[in-house]
Image: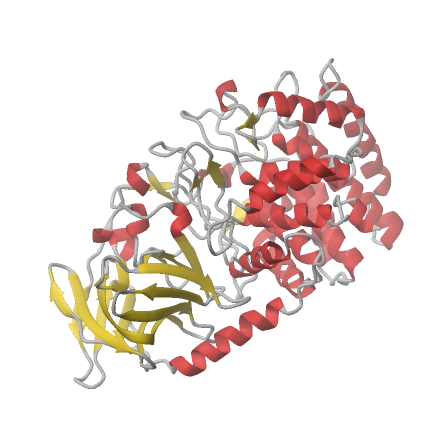
Length: 596
């Protein structure tokens, strides 16, 4: 069985990721991209599905860990009866290769380590051909399967039943470097990595990026770590921003709500950009805007709600039988069926973010405004079509109030681009449709009791309604918003945290339930702060930040009863809303208010 989700720390080189447990096992690694097949897949099964453990032989060793400040270099400190040692784990920031580095440093006394390597490629469907290729003085292990190959250096392993093991001892002041380098199997093995140079470059890269972060409000450390997570989930080659580093971690333990989040949702990426824009990171926005142009291309009527990291369109959902799932939560899925959905809010999210970038000083390129204008045309085409909504329901499409508001926001940003920023477009038609949508939402999206509803024709509420003031549709203290919050507090709060919606209502068309979705509670912090409930906002924020694991990471959901993380991790949505909530507590609330 894998470790609890909250026991995993993230390693990233802004191309792919690895997850390391508190016990020193790399249980998830998909080189060379976030969405590639796994080499280590124990996260979704057990050790036989691939992992790389490294820890003291002393079973009573105590462990503490943290990142080197403002980096993703993980330092795990082991204290044993005979001595103390540290392991520095990281993915090296290099130009053209993918390297896992595990540097063991003796601190005091002596510590005997044991390491076990289990390579099982292609989501544990393929055992590689493994052979020794090094020398006695410079041992190296080569493993090849299909298109993939890795070379592990630093110690001579002994083979036994598809596992390779070794032991070694470090004393005070001594260092042992273990490395794993991935390369395409048709290429020659890469030369050994210069670990000293890699550590220096990797540390400098992350700390250089983080040095630009300005946040003078509450929870500064959590904000910085969250912004670093957002950068860690952004591919530095393509600009694509993945929603999470993992697939199929369960929203419902033992259930089937297991989805692949290693892709670029336009919504999640746009919301990530807003968090980055608010902290002056325009280069990432420029990079993503170019990604968007390449991904959408062609006919805007064919725009998808999500793409691959380089803009791929074919993300068909499949189920794997080679991985049994996290603690038996099946099926394990790769790809995501939501790619074929119509979600009416998505273009609004993109246009709100790009307007924020424009206001922040990012100039429009020759193609960027024509692209946005074409996206507004897609809103017009889908004006009277029900959708699957922000939560990607797999039940019957509805006219979701949040989606209709975000369509209003798309038209509103188009109108403002023309009237306030000198862009060109059919402002008269956009204005007419914008006002038509507002009247429709005011009539059909508001319950007789005065609160906004999840979708037309229902009594239910939905946490996504908390974003209405953020985009300027209404004020945070609008009586309808206050009544909506009251309804949420009465029907969606579980153990003090906010659910997305009532799964029991059947709207999502899925079996089973889920746990509180952390982004929703962060939205509630923002709403409380913007409507004058500062004490409640502060208390809820303190609790939410306290749910992060020991290295500051948040997954998608939180199981209050089990006091554990749930869903894919680390989750961009959770971290970007943490940043927004902290900004709101510092007096910067609302995506519309930020314009001024």
